[in-house]
Amino acid sequence: MTSRAPVLLLDSASLYFRAFFGVPDRRENPDDPPNNAVRGFLDMIATLVTAHRPSGLVACWDDDWRPAFRVEAIPSYKTHRLAENSPVSEESPEELTPQVPVIVAALAALGIPRVGAAGYEADDVIGTLTTRFAGEGRSVDVVTGDRDLFQLVDDAADVRVLYTARGGVRDPDLVDQAFLRSTYDVASGDAYADFAVLRGDPSDGLPGVRGVGPKSAAALLHAHGDLAGIRAALAAGDPSIKGAQRTRLLEGSDYLDAAPRVVRVVRDIDLGPVEPGLPTQVADPALMSRLAVDYRLTGAFTRVVTALGIA
Image (tube, rainbow, N blue to C red):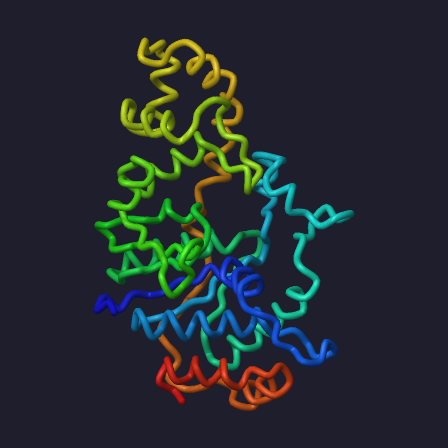
């Protein structure tokens, strides 16, 4: 248990997708509404609050999972996730889709703030709130299964990522600058963003620079400082960038022009006031009771309100 009392910023979709695939569907009657993603998501909140005793909690939301400004920069961005015959909708398991509004209602009933922004992903909301809260001197832990948010890691500002891809919320990887150095050979979150541009990410439809993998991306950053330094050295004919690597970096020039706009999260959305404190009472007991009965969530709600100390 930590004594830092961080603000926890939840990458909500990352967590409820994990819950859907990781929590068994225990319905005895197949006509009952599915609830495994909701149960799992609420149990994740209870686990995180118990383990980390945060000073605040915000569920960050994808109001737009594939923003136009990123698609304009790189049209292949997340195209493989589009639902069949839809130019805009994300493919989602049939039994997960109806659970998302229940998660929204459950957060409202508990009084846990849910924050999204039109035209932006949850990553951008997280980037903006991280910048805001760190600027106020608050510790921040970002909870996600997405490596993209490693770019926010900043030891000096006390910003970490609790990376759930391997151990879940019970045993996440604690990503700080030491983790970035040992795992990717990059020194900071900011360097990780440049590293991600160079390496690319097929899961997001980002091709990267052909022939530049993790080791060569890290080596280029060590030699030239950052992506701007690499490109300046390339333009100046630096002899340390030669042969096939030079050719491929030049061939990737248009991609390198566009990719930072896609990879780097937005940090200055006008979100208005966001109070990250923990709820001191259930915001809507009637709604919570109705959800508990209709979706068989009594145990999950009990675990959350007990963890929050508002039972």
